[in-house]
Length: 151
Image (cartoon, rainbow, N blue to C red; front, side, top):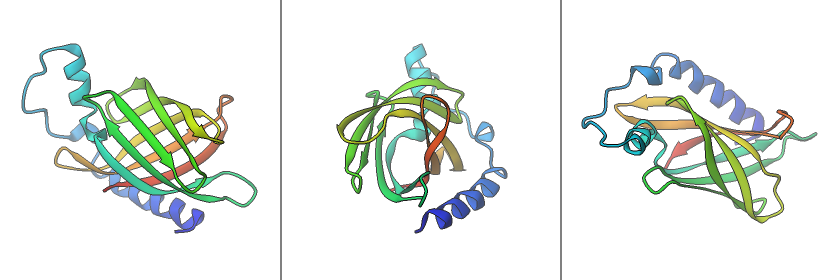
């Protein structure tokens, strides 16, 4: 998928997402025992392996592959950008239940770190099927974007 096709796909998914906002999801089946359990339950839609094609905001909008493996219970959030190639780990900065803001640290390769924002797009039951991945530089400039699908 080209970068521009990816952007159009994300726009179409956003239109669908507005019909099923994440705040309308079903409540958790069990009451969490601790604040950490509650936070994990609120972010359970993140759990899983997410794959897609990202687009760098450069002169030619370069495409690259993304695989994100996210686990809220273990607190591990890892990303592989195999076509660049580099890997990164994410640390949660903030969350509102529908969107999570991460700080990314590059662990290997020659990628630029930044702030990653993951937004839940399509929710079916309690499971998100698509998410957006957006990377911003320290000055707030958009660097890259993608729509990722749960694999």
